[in-house]
Image (cartoon, rainbow, N blue to C red; front, side, top):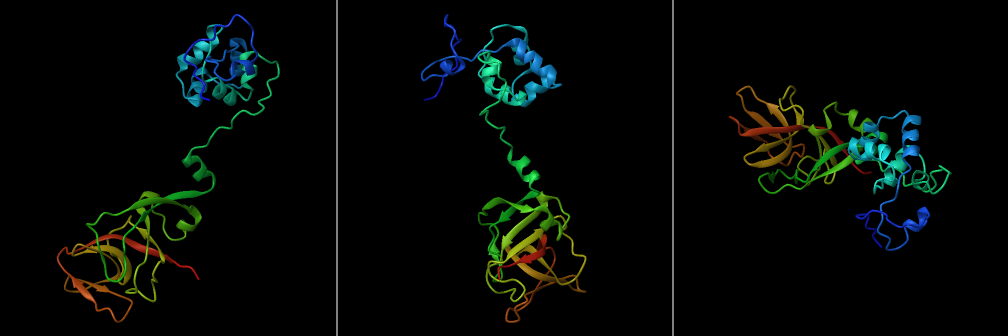
Length: 250
């Protein structure tokens, strides 16, 4: 049953901390202002720092310290930050042992950093067999990759790295259907010939080798010798990013 803490605790009888949380009891658990002040000092915290960690204003912490008999719906969170039990802060016990205080929940970004992961965007483009129409809706999702794995192929920032899945056999035997392709979009200028790129040509998205030609055109090459080459001229080809890795199941 949800507990409504919108009304102050007005009972004239002393109740234990557990009693205050009995089913249907509409209360705000009380604070021992002296214990709160002592714990803030003991932990070497300022009121503003504690407020930041708990997610309340500094004025809220100041009132709990300065004004006696204050209640607060933030009791559990404040107790967790100070490493004591809510019952100790409420004055219902002299034992500060935290007991079953809910652990602080780490953010998604904190968990990723702790485990050495970086977010990479997935482009659901049907690259392969020549092309896919890029003006169609593109589904995008985020997945986590080990940073050490990604850094073996590119030093680009995560927001400029993508992964896609190969489709078809136009780039066989280099790219197989369902191969994982890592695409570095931090560079969109060809500096070497015959590298594999993700690009837009005539409104189509492609994964192909590109070879600059002396006449200013760009030869579009498939590794599958049965697929004929094409040549793009005069801005017909727009680079998206270079394919820096091909990963497949064996």
